Image 1 (cartoon, rainbow, N blue to C red):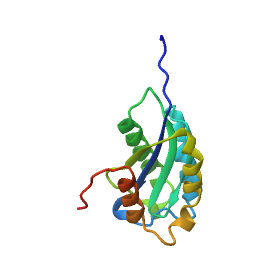
Image 2: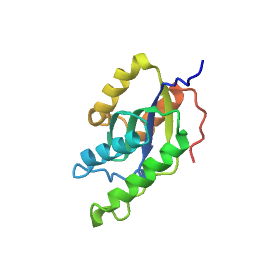
Image 3: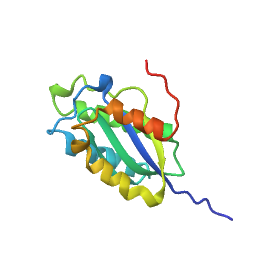
Image 4: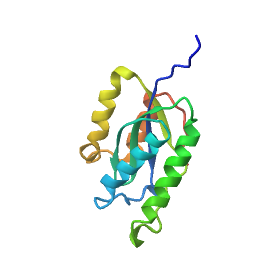
Length: 146
């Protein structure tokens, strides 16, 4: 076979530093679009970007030409710089170190899209920490909370 065929769906999530609720209604839609554009510019097609006041969810296809760590570095670096340009209320905006990235069965991508679309309702009863712990449990990822 003379070609490289890749289709890796990823559900990525990461939070604001110390999970501060800095993603307000003023910036939310524009931030989600900006993050999608970063993904797309790196050939990591963004299928859905959303989140809540203290964290982001991205469903994308990871390009065969970029590593996950490089994608994450660019997402956080570029979006942090951009959001700080949106006014003095964002001068102290930072992303938390680390992230979660979980593979998604292509047949279940619509489930993940619906999940991301439903963040506001979802977080009426569950915090980001509870949500993230559920991901870790579901994917059998061992983690020690500091």
